[in-house]
Amino acid sequence: MPRNWAPFPPFTLPVIAVRIGNRIVRALADTGAAQSLIDPRLVHQLGLTAVGTQQIVGLGTTPFPVRLVTLDNVMIGRCPLHPCTAGITDLAHLRLGIQLVLGINALRGYRLQFDLAESRMYLLA
Image 1 (tube, rainbow, N blue to C red):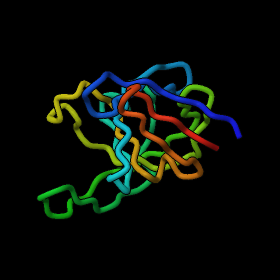
Image 2: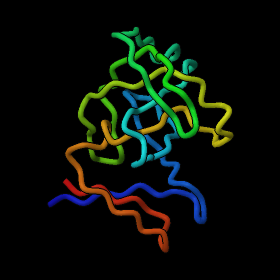
Image 3: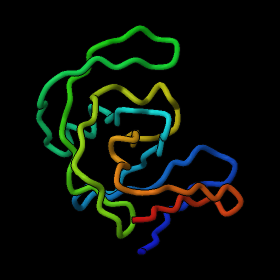
Image 4: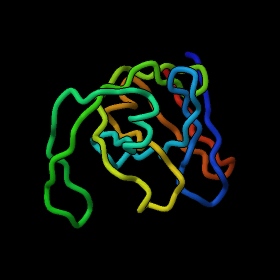
């Protein structure tokens, strides 16, 4: 079984480097998020177009609609992720310097292990 890992800074949330095509972006691996999210600036940079809308709800929020894009050609290290949708929403207010939130819809097909002592997220196929 191939094993791959992505480092993240110690004592922080798991913000990892992700490759989308030929671009490296900072992404939060969020196993508590059902839906992946993408910042509108990255949508523009990648030239993505909306494929629909969906209602999402965050912690302490009421449901609100977001436009969806399809993410494909996403890699964490050597591990390709399955194509998935991501809701377009401004992520700057999170103050994490991220452009993407990888929810469980993006991480399906992999088993995950978080090694907090080594500050690594392992993906197991």
